Image 1 (tube, helix red, strand yellow):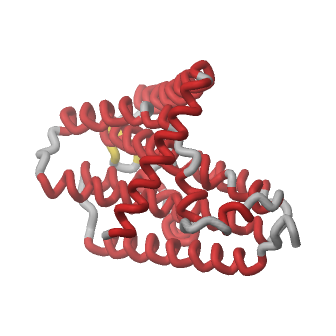
Image 2: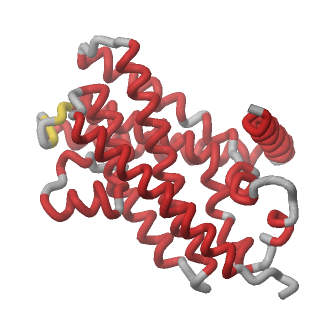
Length: 266
């Protein structure tokens, strides 16, 4: 409990420090917010246009797709707020030897790197996501139960952990390779596809790749499928297995990378 309390205090400190810095440059803070909202409106407009011409996408109705977009928006806002900028800064710190200062502090290195660059402005994008989720639930006539809410929250947490692990794996490869820009581009394309096209449309080898090997298609699809339809026991096992595997893999690659790291003084 002492360790948990200590880390929670550190997160609070990181948030406060980051918020103070962002408020110094308010124009940049609100510009980022308006960019995020604009992207959200574009995504919504694309799906609205699609449903002018079709009644469903592989069995998913319009409001299931609205729920899907809302879930994507919520996950995107949370990961941008909590750890996106911290994790994406890791390769630069590795290449420039700036990791030294983190390794010498009495704090878990990965924990510090993850939460030092939180972005409170991105949290606001969660608001339209929640509005879409509530609107879709009402129009779908979903009976809200405690199990539905708790299960959805649990899946959101699991998907945030999975996305974090996938991001960390790619950034940890900077310990082994000078340039990983191509992998960053691949990640961007996979996220773009999987956060705009629900995983239920994939079949065969494509589904195997995007559900297991590069499981980006799980991230927004699974919570939506659970809340608006039915998530089988097999899918729960798949989700738990994939998340566990990628958490362990990301930690293993990170530890192996630290062993290879050459500091700025070496």
